[in-house]
Image (cartoon, rainbow, N blue to C red):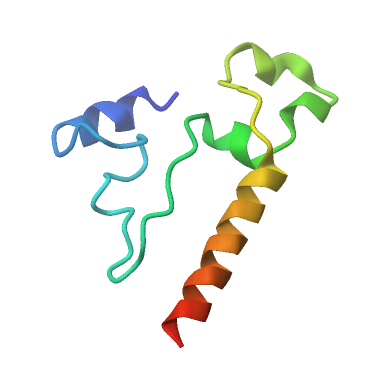
Amino acid sequence: MLLESWKLLSVYDSKHDSQLTRQDAIVPGSKYLGAARADHLAVGLPLDKMADKSLLSFLDHGKHSRAALLESVVRYVVQDLETAE
C-alpha cells in the first residue's frame, strides 16, 4: 500500500521510509539519536498484545522493547541538558 509513495521518494533519495526523505526528517539544530530498524507500527504499538492478529502476517514485528527505547531517549536528553548548562 506504500509502494507508490516509496517509488516517488526513491527518485529524490534512496534513504527514506516511504513518507519522508532522510533530509526532510531531520529537524534543523537537532541531534541524531538513532533509528529503530522495524516497522513504524511495530515500534509504536504493542502488536503482540493486539486482539486482531491479522496485521502480524505482514508487519515487521521484531522484538523491540518500547520501554527500553523510551528510557534510552530520556536518559540521553537528560544528560544532554545537564551538560548544556
